[in-house]
Length: 172
Image (cartoon, rainbow, N blue to C red; front, side):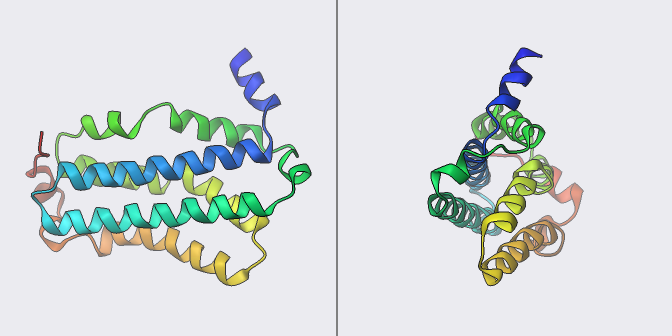
């Protein structure tokens, strides 16, 4: 309970940006790890690398947005529960997640979890709240939607069925 209270007391916009940026780094590392572990599946590697590159762009967007805000704005209170949820996601490293993969389906399911997690909730909040460029907001919202949709519609054809993904083991 004391740790949760401390998290809420330290819930500033600056800390929320820090966590959001760290989550984007983790997402990039996770997708890059998928590409490494399934390097024998060329089409899957290309898919995961595109996702990793998108996460780099998300991170850069957040860094620029944070850097554009004055210190007094960054010191303002943020949603403590949202911050705590983001910090909980950071407790398990991408290396730990990638090391636990039994097959390509595990990577696919982890992607679904990530794309539906607080990572994107925090990202949407920060961009929607602090970006003043409606085109940027729309493009980034489209990116997030595309990620979720692409797992179903654009995942390599050879691996679209669960059975086909479960048959593909990762490299050691």
